[in-house]
Every structure is written in structure tokens, then in C-alpha cells.
Image (cartoon, rainbow, N blue to C red; front, side):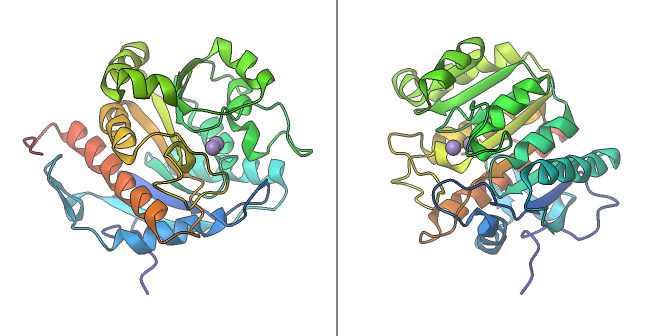
Length: 286
Ligand code: MN
Ligand code: MN
């Protein structure tokens, strides 16, 4: 079996993007298994046509590589330091990192490496706990640690759960709850977000549980009343031009493949959207 993401090359030298899987779920609080997420996403990526009509991009013509999976230490603080190093190496080679997860704590290391102006995260959860189950590097602390690492411009999309303390802390961030997005529509919200970002460098993190668990049930911490795959596709299409680091985390392949299928297609959407913007070519059809 070919373990690379479909249409990817193992050759990193000429690539613009490097996909890397982080097979890690050591701090899982409810249902384990996101370490198998990267594998499931790659497997289903072979389901799709290489051509994406909306962007008029054929992924066979895009130079991107798949560096395979990295398996970090099971100690959360060590794992995150290791991820920071791995992503720093990718950035030093002037590639845009695309991370497949794996649990959301991994994003802390990636964002520390990328050091973006803005951190935009799509997540059912606030992930603003100062520590959880004995570790400040638990997946429930990812956005809090990123704030502490000095990335203060944070936008959270699709939230619908958190502790009272987390909601208090979130007052200083830009939070668009799932309910607000359902009321206003994702397009209006994204217009507002684009104005806030104003073309500055952005790290975009998708926690798979931002999507309603009734649609994509392969999740470690499922939540109902969420966004749709189409909403997240809009987020990716709109923000891709500013993105300097991207991840799709928390895919736990215990379902019939829905969650990994949506993830694989949205990773492809990111690559095609970014590539099209970068090359400023092609027409738009739908
Ligand atoms: Mn999360
Ligand atoms: Mn979450």
C-alpha cells in the first residue's frame, strides 16, 4: 500500500508544501484513537479526482510532499518540543507545513515554530484550560498555551462548550460561537475575520470536532450542534491566502470513514486554494 497522501511526492526538495502526520494521542481524555487519524486521512485521499474544479487546480501539478508520520514521545511537554523542532525544520526548508493529527495539543508545538501574527482555530471547544488532568500540555489547553507563547491575536470559530473559567478567559479573544455562525451565516463572519486579519500571516488549525458529531462521528470528544463541512470549506477557501501553517487534528477513525473523508478533502481544498492564490491563475467554476 502507498502510504503517501494521494498526489504527493516523497521528494521534499522541490515541494511548496510538506504534509506530516503526528501519530499522537497520549493526553486523550475521553475516547482514544486519534493517533490513527493521519493514516485514515491518507488512505481515503485516494478516493478523489486529482482535479479540483472550484480552484481549477490539478493536484498532480502541485508540488507537495508527504514526509510520513512522526511519532513523538509520550510525555506531553517533550512531545510538543519535538513537534516544534520538526516543524521548524520544515520551515527552514521554506515549505508550508500541513499537519495531520493526532490530538490538538500538537498544534502548540507547530504554532511555536511558525510564530504567526494570527492564530485562527475552528473547534467545538475553547481549549483554554490552564491545565487538565495534570498536564498544561493536554489537548484541552492548546489555545491557552498558544496565547501564553505570545500569539495574542486569536480567533476561535464554532465553539459550543467550555468551562466558566475558559469563557471568562475567552473575553479577550475573538470568539464566534457555533450559534452565532448559524444565525449570521459563515460568509458574513468570514468577511469580518478577513478584515481583522488584514493580510497578516495566519496559522489555521482545524479541530475535527468543530463539525457536528452527527455528520462526522469519528471524534475523540464529540459535540452536537456544530458547524457543517461546507462551513469549514468556506473558512479554508477564504483564509488560505494568508495561511503560513495549517493543520487538521483530532480525527479518530472509529466511524464509517466520514470524518477522515471530510478531513482529506479539506486538506486538498487548502492546498488547491493556497496554490491558486499563489499563482493567481485559472477561472472559478462551481
Ligand atoms: Mn481542540
Ligand atoms: Mn475540540
